[in-house]
Length: 353
Image (cartoon, rainbow, N blue to C red; front, side, top):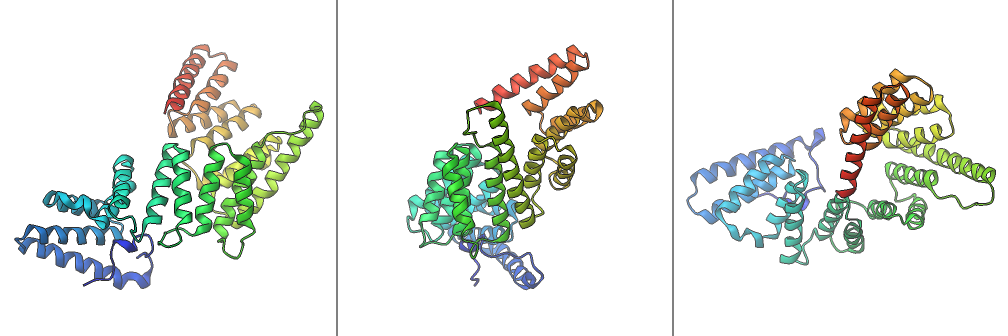
């Protein structure tokens, strides 16, 4: 009846005005099959109706209704753990809701049931994304590389986008040279790299320049010069990234950190302001703004910024530590002690997660 099925998820979208007829057709199909469910007596047929309904809701990105339909199907037929398309759809829903263990299990079962599944590279991508989120970077890298290496199945990301993710994982693993080399290769492929992706790549290269280890160990003066040159190089690259994608708040945050490191407070405030407009609910940004105010001896402004950071993320150890320092320098010892304790508890908790 319909050519639109779950294998098209992530490849087609219904968010443009010209897609409205197709969207309405899917909604009509869902209604049609819901009526058939009410009139059907054969359980296996009802199961298939529910699977179709789940798939179409998922194509429309109505995840709660898709999950309800999949659960109704599974309640009628527990053998669906051998149905690759059903498992793919269920895995996507679990992934959307952050139910990571269930999503991993569903995705891996798809590959077990059908090693030649047409969207297997997308499954590798999704497994890589989940493991990246969980901080298991070796597993994440393994699945991203599998997705990149499989040119015979369909993936919702381009090869350049997959390469960027691999570079990002190298960065998280501390393999900075590997990350930088991969990013620079991507920039050479400007004919196939989209402008926004180019902005992301430049952003990460700029940030690598900012925190790269110093190589010159002769004198303190030469170290300071080398550090200043690194930061200036980072600023130039990050400014290029902003031109590629002026909507990316993270790029402005990194740029603000660079300006602050050079004590260019006016430029830092300006870029942080741009960042807040795009990343209002980011604790790191507000913490950095607080530090900047602190260096300017604007105690009340710094206090408000640190409080904003903690309101966004109550376990932000650095914000608690900076707030403690602020209280201590203001002679509020008990408040400072409370903040330091929170910082230690939250830091230990983050390291154990």
